[in-house]
Length: 168
Image 1 (cartoon, rainbow, N blue to C red):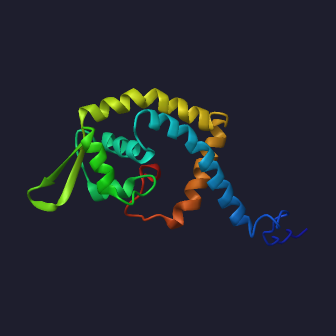
Image 2 (image 1 turned 30 degrees about the vertical axis):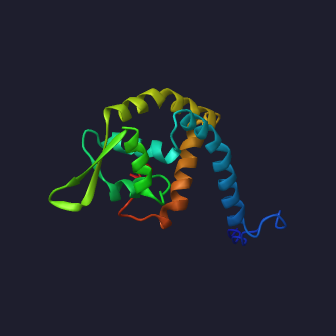
Image 3 (image 1 turned 90 degrees about the horizontal axis):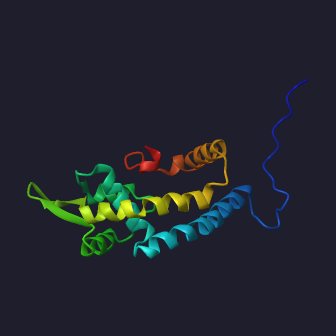
């Protein structure tokens, strides 16, 4: 018996969505909205935004070395429209330092400071608990499958030279 040809993608709730792709995208967006509420509470209590926390986390990954501002900006989970302002706020709190290299004054190197490392350590158990609340109801196999599908979905849209730490 010959295999049945693939049917075009359709959706039974065509009145709600223009396409299956739209349904999936809107589900992703709604899921992000529901899950970010947990992290906003954790980071808000520490006086941080999710992007500021991610910035410190990225700098910790290379500590005691520094990271050029452009590299740091390209590795953020979500792009920061005003990287300078984001770094200014963290520097004012003493959580990071910036330095221009004498050999190339256009490059600004960023380093997490001991107080920045201490804040990350202070938040570590709360962040783990946040992730458990967000996705702990899924099995390890389901989590791996979801991570793989999400990576596959964004892969054609990633900049190969500036991958996020999630994609390395």
